[in-house]
Image (cartoon, rainbow, N blue to C red; front, side, top):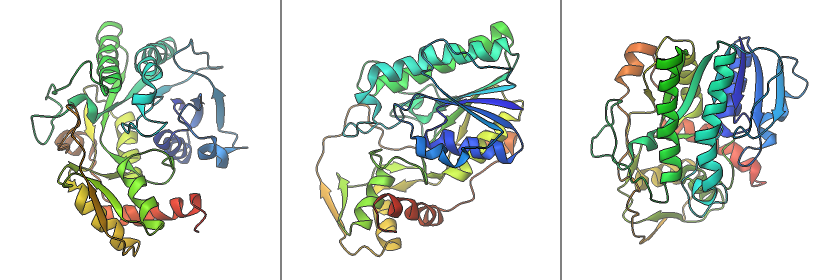
Length: 319
């Protein structure tokens, strides 16, 4: 296939480029570098099966030649308010990527009679009242809170994708992506895994807000990309959760990272009022992915952290 990937210079997008190229496909990568990093694609320079187009997907998209599949991954994705890459600090760009960007990429797919895959998110469940979260759960979301620029953009994107599927008969897929980590995460991403690894490598105490009992389900990037690729080549049109069903508290994550990096500085706790839409627990039910895609993650949290740490050592000049 010839595949268009928006957000190609991002963390997940760049790994998807690599996977699709390894599978023998041609890839057209698109990014405007608001949060993407050109270094993530530098190794593809000179690859005759890879074409890069610098472009903002919220504007009309033109791709030379035909495409067989469109993967829409362009969007800020970090919820961290202190990070310049966080969607709370890029609210208009985030809404445009989810709304206008989805409309434009669906248009490219329709014009080419191509399959379409939307990168959605576990954030569409909000601060869930159902645990673990199944695809049939409608969510518990604040539509006007600070996080809503991302949550509602993705919820709109899902609705528009299904409208194109039902009304135009477009061959669509929706991946609801849960917390993912690994090499190529931006050093200023602001999410917990890169924050903890950097603190540990600097031999600093790891900063845990509150009592650390809030949980997330961490999926290593290779497992995530495998799930997304299986969804792309499947015939599934309803949303599918892709993530790690093993739930880990933030406190336990800090202990694991300190142990693996031999950081004896320990943990320091700071009180911080929990935001009204900040989820306390997050864990996917991946029954549909297991049954319909024959997929589940295989890389343990400990192994994933060990694979990720050298990347941040290099970024910090400690390699």
